[in-house]
Image (tube, rainbow, N blue to C red; front, side, top):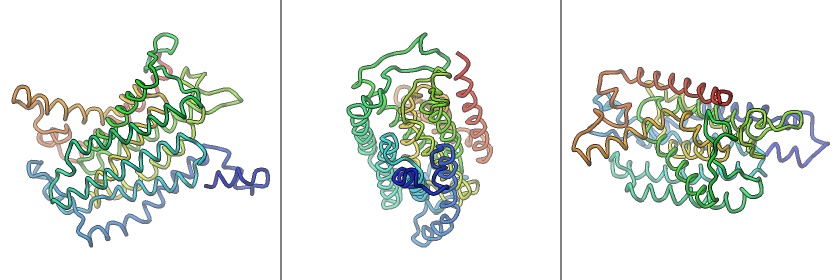
Length: 370
């Protein structure tokens, strides 16, 4: 909104508004705004959730240490997402299609997550929505948005239909896809990222730590992919795919990071509030969409390494039991496996955070090591 007002006034803008020409300044303000909203309003929300008895439902077969979490306020991700969205609407360029597509996916996944949490509270079960219905709604939602993007937006921004790989120069190896196949691939990337973040959200602060690292990392990558310096694209200097206008997503990433930090203040061990699917699904959807729009789908495997590990552990556990009748892990997702092996919850969380930081550094190193 502020950037729109600045464009509306043009040369007559007040001095402060001229700072809005800098996407770095707007990113800092977006982070600060979302962080302030969360720090200010979470105490009120936690009291409201407690008063309405909107508490966490714990799996009966889970680690015994989790039984004491039963009744802890959940669905706290609602404020996290609202804070990020409000901050984006205040500081982003509202004429940018990448912003609206990402916000649209985030909003729709918030609704799906809300329904899933409501199902759990209604049935007093950790099951939630019927699995097939939940997965179908996620896939259909992202499929519609990807159709819109590849049919209408991609041709306008000259979106590169080649897949780029980390540690490999574009002139050495790329894979070009037809638009329809790229849309299918992009939909699966966003769906998988959303599901993976949701699966990771099982310990105090576990999912939100890597989310902060991922949003900061992708914020920098979005800026490098779309911004110019001295009239020349930064992407060209770093051998990155150039996507005009995608640098605006750095402001959105900053808003997500700020809201996530504010949420972590109350979600760190022992948590005062849980995120719920209403927060985890849209966060993953947003991060997956940003990976697609910045053309870092395969690099996101490294950046989202913790989420990928959690996702794969569930797949391996499920199909191993179906095919052999044996389980590979003591419990899935894998963070529960380490708990079953005797690791304290805080140790699992902090070590996963450390790994996430290391993976982000590897991702940045891949920009030069080719």
